[in-house]
Length: 180
Image (cartoon, rainbow, N blue to C red; front, side, top):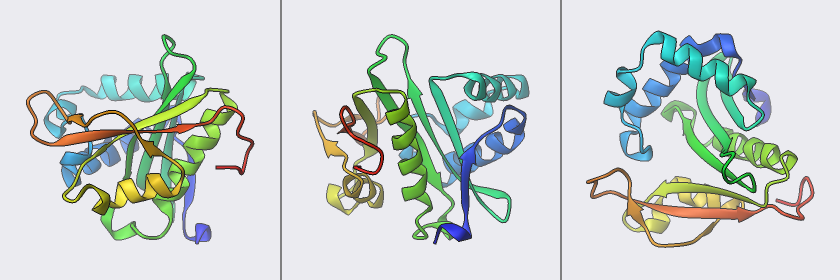
């Protein structure tokens, strides 16, 4: 299936495409992200350009596009906070609805897992929005299939939100490429 799409890092100069896809993700799946569309609409073009350039230049940030016929249809990111260099975070995983169930989400997550392994972190963590019932969430099923496990108690998606997110994590220490 991977011949139908390509997954690759986002280049600094692609901030307009990143902005378009990120806003599309927030509009289509507002309950999948702690950031809101309203918040991101406030960001200036300079802010988008700087964010994309900083991510592209950073060893601790890994931003990906999934593309079909050269057009971005999904994204994902990995991030390591310098205050916790042994822990990587998977975030903003999203695939346009018309391209779901093709393996794009899985490939995006797998590439962030591989990136995190190259950074020699011990753990990769994420937060997934809970659905009812929780195990029915396609995102949660994807993460579990790839080896993530639930930990901790659910927390509000955003301050004041009734929606909850569940922390999930994967131990990477000692894992060799292909063991995940």
